[in-house]
Image 1 (cartoon, rainbow, N blue to C red):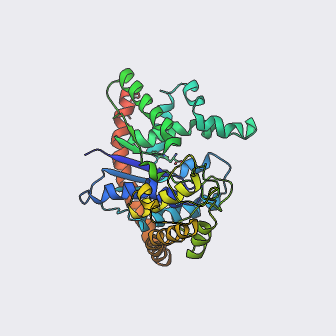
Image 2: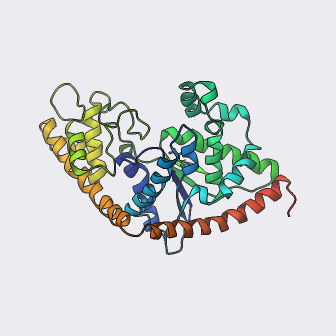
Image 3: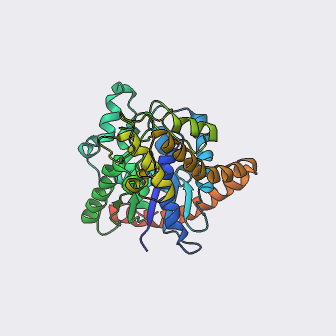
Length: 334
Ligand code: TRP
């Protein structure tokens, strides 16, 4: 079976877009797995949260929060590999070795690097912002990943991982599986409710258009009711002409499993559509939130023990992989 992997960076709060686009698909794939399977790898990429200015206490708090939310959303540690990146030193060890197979120009060309670096003074741009796609390649290649389900913004990074793997294989012999991007469905790319031309992103400057998994029901309803809509008052699906309304229909479709075009026929007015969206959003998030709350009030040691077990399993896999990489690249065995 193909191995799928995805990472969640604790640099902002998880929202409905993350759930629909990334968490739900990977949790569903894992549900079909047999016990003890490692065909699905779900990890918290805490090291990636250090590439921009960060608050140490916040990264630590969010890492545990993400673990609880991912478990609350259905991650089953018996049926996947579930870990925190920094608990598995092989990620960073492989990162260095892959840096030795990556060109400076290649890293420098990454669109996300260019965009983020352009917003900061040179001396404030962390080196890790430049090299982070190579760490991402290490995350992917360490586990011989076949499929990486990511949105458009991360596609280039997965392609870089594929290029690095191919180059390494041709220079040093067959070592890595070539990963490929699998695209989440269109409807999974939810937009910001307050500015429907932008993706719902946890690094967005304003949070008024983001539906966080830890928002209260009142907050979720308020954000949906205040969503920016379009001129006119008719409800129909047309992402170009009606980005706001179409986004609401996409959310409705993503939560209920319907088709946005077909669903549009059920509503005469924007207000009706918004109330329906608020209801399904709350229905979708409430069970995750309930399990999150249970995990948050129970003993923290339980969640941490789950993470420790996942890391131990990952270290075993990673160590074996690294042994082969080191041999291929020319390091003397100790
Ligand atoms: N960079 C990804 C993000 O910010 C998270 C991530 C880290 C990831 N390593 C990965 C995703 C490997 C897929 C595969 O969203």
